[in-house]
Amino acid sequence: MEKVFPKNFWWGAATSGPQSEGRFNKKHANMFDYWYDIEPEAFYNQVGPDTASNFYNSFREDIKLMKEIGLNSVRTSIQWSRLIEDLDTNTLNEDGVRFYNEVIDEFIKNDIRIVMNLHHFDLPVELYHKYGGWESKKVVDLFVGFAEKCFELFGDRVKEWVTHNEPMVVVDGEYLYQFHYPKLVDGKKAAQVAYNLNLASAKVIEKFKEMGMHEKGDKIGTVLNLTPTYPASSSQEDLHAAEIAELWNNKLFLEPAIHGHFPEKLVAILTQDGVIWESTAEELQIIAENTIDFLGVNFYHPNRVKAPDIAPNSVGDWMPTRYYDHYEMPGRRMNIDKGWEIYPKAVYDIALNIKENYKNIPWFVSENGMGVSREERFMNSDGIIEDDYRIDFIREHLEWLHRGIEEGSNCFGYHLWTPIDCWSWGNAYRNRYGFISNNIHTQIKTIKKSGRWIKEVIEKNSLYS
Ligand code: BGP
Image (cartoon, rainbow, N blue to C red; front, side, top):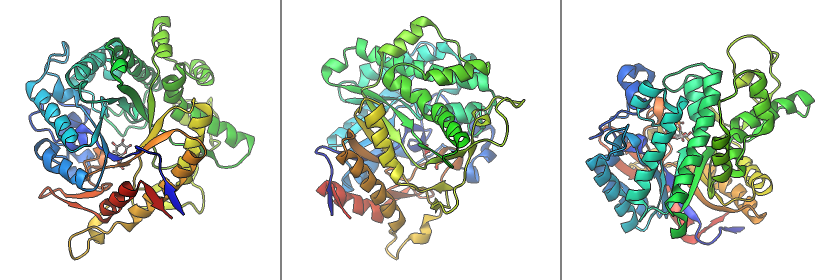
């Protein structure tokens, strides 16, 4: 049956500055640039961000390929560490300004809507060393200054802005589970960073309003990795575990972004556990008054949880996982390469959750995708990767999304991670996600079968199942 998507649906893909540009001509190092400099062995095959997918040099050809597969919108990010010359006074780096101007113009020339993000795990490392990074409210204000420069410079052409990508990953990766530099385990700092990132988003939105951006018809949102929580059973213990997992992983950012306040129950738990953040009445007011215009949802896999094997008042480092354990559901469908469960129905659950509990705010799938390693396995004699598994993955997610839209959820787009295979943090180039492949030795880029397939879907604005 034909499934038609809403008019003007955003069909596209997402990437980020630090994962695509390469470090060419960059004055400052971000957290990942620095981490690679001091510990290259922490990265898959010791491949770092130096070249990434060479977007800095090949953006014109890359955007042409994106156009060729029909994308009508693309998200990327401006690197703070590229645009700003003096991080304390927010002066501009000339080459950074030139580069982003040319990139934006090139997208516009190709009739591709550019959605611009301001922070994608790429805090300039100097601000971490000098002030403690996102632990510090001084850095929050410096970020607002950087955002202001972006609005001034590019606000005449960029119409949709994003404050952060997956801020929860900064909290988890840097302060709890040690998968991002500085790999700390510190519950108190983790909570403060979560608060400060929420505050930073609200303060940037406040600045956006002050600058009259809404009057020009521009919009600002945020991108959250909403991983719906599913309890292992309907036992009271498992349901309780799922409730707390949902509070920590999703509502900690979702509620302030949309409702303007933190979930009371979570605040009570963090207070009781002695890890609550420092806040002021004035800051809480800013958070209350500066909520988002639209939401981006990154969805890859569900989060299944069960009651933990330990008691919540166990002694040791504070971790949210004292309240829940991950649950591996027997019979689950997996992407074994990446180690993630495939569960497309979650997109429908997200759609209805937003409709019912989050003001039915306009939202889009800002990332979804399937990371597969050694994709050369699927290359045909013409050198094209036949990624039918990706086509199936996208189709199934789109079918569930379509059902959510039919039931009234206000979703206006779908972006795959990612247009062109790009560098992915510690995993470097292990998992490939793109519609377009990238030979990292030659930087030759080739459209995959999924790229040809999506073009047809976009042209028809519909799916046939
Ligand atoms: C998301 C991030 C992206 C990207 C993607 C794939 O969480 O927003 O930046 O990295 O995950 O990640 P990986 O290659 O580690 O599987």
